[in-house]
Image 1: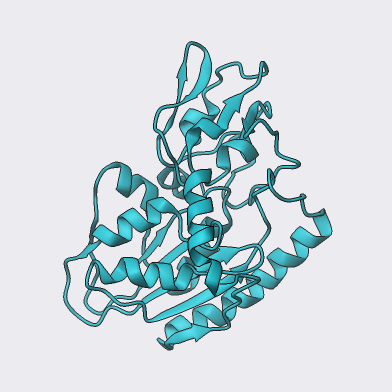
Image 2: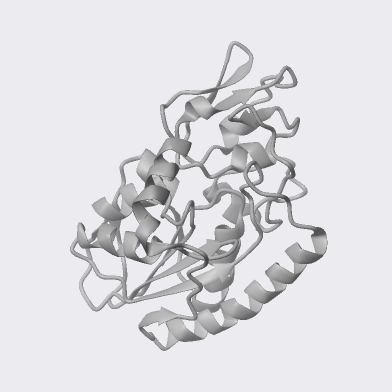
Length: 270
């Protein structure tokens, strides 16, 4: 089984590739958290893959909440591995995830870094088309190796790219992430027409259309950046800024549909 959290599709794309090779179902972490469903049903000795992005060198808050409460109800030796999708390095995510798993009396057996295009385009400059294509091609090659490692149940930190994260600044990055998750940072311009795109898309079911405008109904989110990257009218701003560019993974966003959908719906259309 694979459990996925995805904002603009990199992690979902990786999940689909792993699933095609190894089989199993894909579960939507955000949906499970929304429904307070933390039970994971596995076959005897079935491996469990956790695939999600890295934010500020940390695991997404929705992933943390799910993993800390995760309950695997079946017996056997469940090989647990993680694939961290990120633009430059996984930072403190392996330690972060291991700590969360310990609260569920579980252990991380192996983890991998998968470098993919950046979507935090409020903070960073957009990558050009060539760079994006090169990253995606390299990711496909790396996924082949990850799949083989999982098939052989290899353990440890395998081809992990930490990136430019200073271990002494772990708490600083964690605090930065928590402050960034405040939804007061989000606002809309006059171009928001209340189309409902972001409401339908938001993985954590936080955005609602109220009085004809997108409104964030909870104090914090996991900061997936999906709403900023996928708004049809580029009407969403963060900290008073519009994204410098936009990005989504084509596997995640069916071109023929014209609107982002829940993971369950996406699987029906793939």
